[in-house]
Every structure is written in structure tokens, then in C-alpha cells.
Length: 366
Image (cartoon, rainbow, N blue to C red; front, side, top):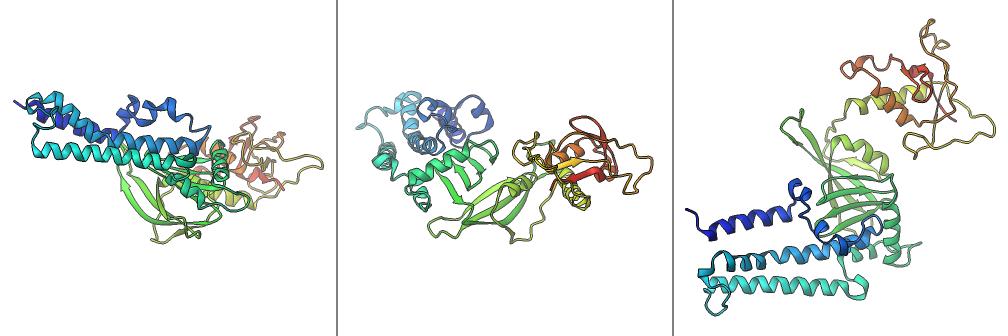
């Protein structure tokens, strides 16, 4: 029969491991620092930098208290050891208690040092200070810029809470348990350094390709950092990232069928006749993504191209309402996913008026 001491030790070790490296089960149950201290942390959307300054500080304090929590738990699980009496415990337990107290005291001292001068000494604040340049006159001004861009809905965000990757219009951010790495897009360069195959779930086929990218900066005060993402998210990252991406390791990046089709789709549409807006008409935002301008117009041109004299295509009278990416994704979503070889030659209904069109009828707005 197992002793209470061994049972508690194993249970506390598993709990501590799951609390630090939070699995989905713990996250669903609310056993995370973010959830337990949500009232003090505030909202990430309202103040991204302030939220993570507080989050990293409280995370350090809580994690450093785990050894002391083990000792206090052993006082209850193994009362015969007299751990509550400092003078009666063995030398090993006394040393463990002193180390636990020193670790907790050191953590509190460090957090108090960070909090001085309105968190001026915090590592995240120091990282922001590395980016002070016109038009920003202080690290608070840089923090406001990051907060404003994080609130926008068009940012790229992926990854688990302990290793999130966020790309805004001006920043590349990596959120970890104890720090937030950041680089200004105008100063950084990104390199694909590694590729690995992972079976994310037992029934996922084929295995997912995990890419490792190193974000460097011409700013000597900014340390390089690695970000990881699934290869299927690479195209979305590339669209949001203005910095150049190099493939130093000659990694073959796997793309989905839809992404491969979109590349061919864009190339074919570029060969079609452009559409010139009537005088006085302005280009509106795409109603699909509400970010890119509506840069496409459907005109029945396939009969003029000689593709099919008895074309099934119909004239669309809608004004330009969709960007090329959204229209391409709509085109791909209406296809037979088991026969990708027929996608380019097929016809789909207009997403607005349902008039049928083919790829030859798509014009880029000039």
C-alpha cells in the first residue's frame, strides 16, 4: 500500500507540472494564472502591455510559491514528520524549507524592483525602451502604439497561450509565460530555420508541419527570438508581415490545396482584362474581410475570349464588392474538393447576386 507521503508527492508533482505547462483540461477548468487573478489583471484587449506586465509578475510569484506549497502540503499529508516544527525536522527538510522561502523572497524582491517608477524596470518595459524613436518619445508612448494595434481585428494571432505569436501592422510579438518578445516590422527580418512533422491528433492525416522562424532585428538592443506556427498558417502570416522572409534551411513549406489554388487563381486573373471604375465611383472595402479594398469586378468576358460560344456564364450587375483573396476563397469553397483538377474550368455563382461566372470573367479594378 502506498504511503500518504508518496501519494501526495506524485499528485503535487503532476499538479505543478500541469499548472506551469497548462494543458487544455486545466485551461477549461479555469486553473490558470490568468483566470484565477483575472480581476487584478484586467483586460488584455484594453491594455495589452499593462496586462502582460501584471500577468508575468504574478506568474513568477505563483510559480515560485509551488515548492513552499509542497512543504505546507506535506505538513498535512505526513504529520508524523513534524514538519510544522522547524527545530524537529531533519536537515534535508530544513534545507528544502529555507530554499523555498529564499525563492519566494527573491521573487517578491524582484517584482517589487520591477514595479518601481510605474513598472519602469520590468523586462517588458525595458524591451519597449529599446524601440523609443520618433514619433515615440517614451516607452509609454510605444506601449500605447502596441495596445492600439492589438485591439484591431485584422491582426494575425496563433499559438497556445504560453507561446502565442501576434503580428500587427507594425509589430511582431511573441507572448511567453514570463516575457513578451517584440520587434518592429520596419527593423526586423524573418528566417525560416527549421521544419518538423507532428501528429497533432491521433486521427489527423497527414501530420502537421511545424515551422520555426527566427525573428531578428537591425536594432542591436533587440534580441532575436523564435516563433513557431503550422505551415497552413504561413500564407496568412506572410500576408500580414511586411518584413522579408528568408528560407535559410531550404525548407519545403507544405501548402493546402486551397492555398495552391489561390496562387494560380491570382496569376490567371492578372491575365484578364482590367476594369476601370466609372468617374466619381470610389473603391469600397471588401464586404468579406472588411480590410482590403474591393478590387474585383465580374464581367461576362468568357464568350469574348472564345472559351465557350455557348457559355453558361451570366452577366453580373453588382458593383465591385469583393477583394481578390475573398473571391478566390469563395470560388474554391464551391468546388468539388475531391477533384481539384476541375477547379479552374468550373463556374460558380456570384456570392452577392448568384449570377454564374468563371475565372475568365473576373477583372481586377484599376
